[in-house]
Each structure stands twice: as C-alpha cells, then as structure tokens.
Image 1: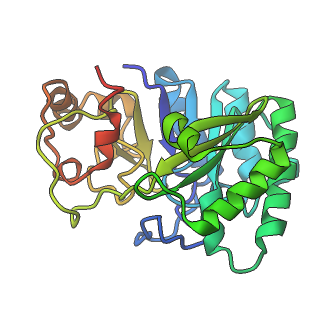
Image 2: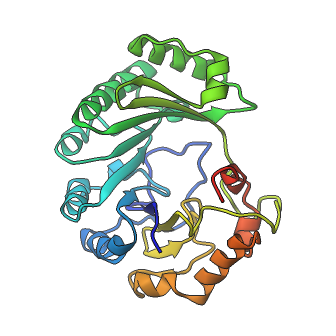
Length: 286
C-alpha cells in the first residue's frame, strides 16, 4: 500500500476560531519532536509526502524548524496549510527549510481581529513570493464560495490580489477553472464552502467511494490514525501509532473492511455515511 499523502496534525490548537472550521473539542495538544520523528520512521515506507495539518495552525508549533529538518533529512516532501497570520513571524524558519507547497487560507481574513487586511496581505505576499522564488508552490485559497459566488468582502480581497499580480479574473473563469495561475509557482484557488463531517450531520448515503485509505490517511496529534484528513475528532480511529506499528494498523480488519467497502461502492463507517465532502471525489475515483 502506498499513499499519495499522509496528514500529520502536529498541533490541534489554532490562533483563530474560524466559522468555516469545525471547532476543536479535544484536549489541546502539541506533538513532541520525538513523537514526530517516530511517526516519520513509521510512515516512510508508505509515502513521500506529508501535510502538516488536520486541525490546528501548524506555524504555531514551537519546534517547527526541527520538524521541517526531520522531513528534509528523511527526504519527505512537506506540504502545509495555514491561515497565514504567522507567516511573517516564522519566515526565517520557512526560508531555510525545504517546503514543497504552502496552502494559505486567505478566506480566514474575516476572522482576523488584531491585524488589518492590508497588513495581513502585505505579510502574506512578501513571504509567499520569497518562498515561491525558492521553489515552493504557493496556493492562495478562497474556499468560501456559495453557489459559485463570492461575497462582496471576498471580492474586495480578490481585487487586491489582482492588483498585486496584474491579472484580471472574471466570474466565469473562477467557476470554470477553479485554479488560476498568478505567476510562476503561485496560484489562487476557489472552492465552495464545505461542511466538516460529523455524526450530527444529516445522513448522506451508505453507497459511494472515497479517497480515504486509498490515496491518503491522517494522524491526529495524540497519535490516533484516521482514514482521512476530515476525521478531526477521531470518530473512525484505526489505532494509535504510538502504541501499534503503522504496518499493523494498515493491515487490521477494520482498515481492510473500510477499504473493501469503498472498492465495492459501500460506505461502512457511520461518520463517512454522514460526510458530504466525499461526493467531491467522484470524478477522481476509478
């Protein structure tokens, strides 16, 4: 078994409480360097790419530089997702590390209380452009569309991006393309707001497929292994990587049952039956 990517939640704490993100009700936890190093050794045979995110703001980890150094030493490519508010503060750590891709959730701007939009964008642009010049892919995310439309505040933000990169983005292009190049290795992505899966969400179906345990899986900050990056509460815990070898977790009866179910078009886990996000994968799954 080989995954395209494995998500590692190095911290479940965040400096924002964004309305579009599911709120963390778990004990606040920061993964230690020793724990992270152990995880990398366990997953190395199964992937070459990690995403340092499930919940939490990865740039808030106090040992981020050491985490990135471990990945570089073990030849693991790093992708990160951040709200961007700490980019400037952590820029030196980022400049001297190898990062494959940085996803910046610009749609978090409405939640910022202590920085103006102008200052926020200035810092994001400066650090992002420096990283892109070093070879990092940058994805500015506006994942807050509703019925293929951006609200007026977000349109104002988009205008500032267009001014910065001297481009013109039409409404038709946003809908048709989804991702638009700004300059070399820099993109802006548009997506609809999505609902995090939860057992309290409306039932979707017991039929279908997903990329969970096919191209990806996740590891929470306490070591629990979950089928995908959206199981933020560990409702479908497959095992704990600090207690059981990753190989054993992947070969367990529970893991195989989920995988075989998806292969047969059956959704066996209750959380997955209440997940609408998996419907976005229909065109990617064969």
